[in-house]
Image 1: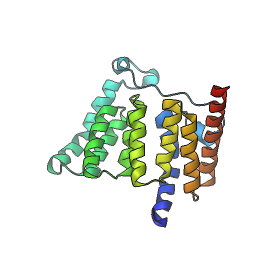
Image 2: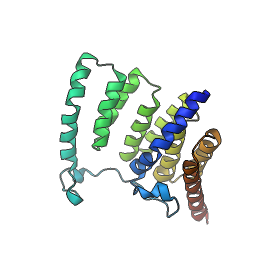
Image 3: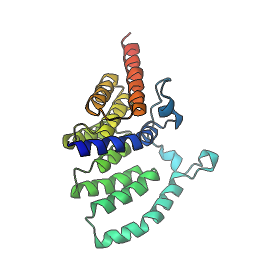
Image 4: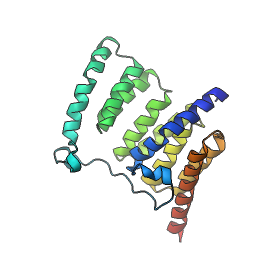
Length: 213
């Protein structure tokens, strides 16, 4: 990766790091900011029963969210009719469904996007997140590893890989390895983000020690 690409990757990581953590493990927004604390809970895959059951605080059901996603995706799908291999457009549609927790639909569009642009790091990252939320940590890890073939030092991918290994596979050792590589290969990472990754390394290392004792 050249210097400009490396700088861009670090900037993207800094901007999206909080979002990624919240998406992957369902954390409160303050977690990544404040760092220390008990290991975050694993995010369970969405239950089929939630699709028809009401959600707390007036939140829409998954069925309602899918209906809203379908409506929001309509103009994009119309554009797709005349340009069916537009990778960026397919990614946009996938993001609409991902934001509505329609992860299978999102993956379908991400896969179509990757068929036309297999090296797109953003699409690979979002596909991995959807796979994780569906409870398929192994496929999420495989997707992230595939992304690292194209950009071995990508900060966001290494961060996500650590989270999925830790939370999805109880692999604290693998998580720490991913985060240590992140810190080593991204020296321009902001101090706040660096501290947050270091805190996660401490927590995962502590979890590993507890499990071995």
